[in-house]
Length: 71
Image 1 (cartoon, rainbow, N blue to C red):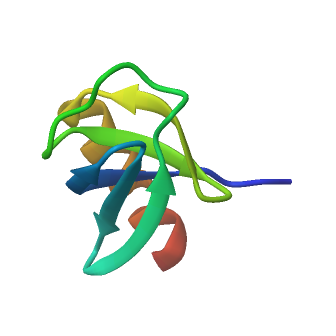
Image 2: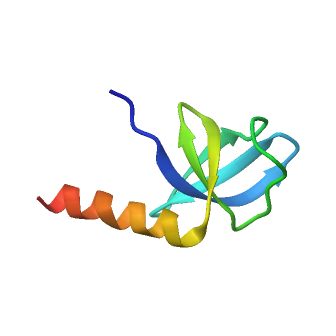
């Protein structure tokens, strides 16, 4: 089973972005998505941004991950 994580776009350069979640930054290829802006949330899987999320949905998903971690 694979897990894709909601991450926030911190910087963009061409088809590459630096994305962050809980202080952890990663590089992600954003070539599959419509134009993005810094501050947008994306789902990242295996180094690729595969879907754009609205902020409310992204934060709700991250909160669920935290609850699972504590269980």
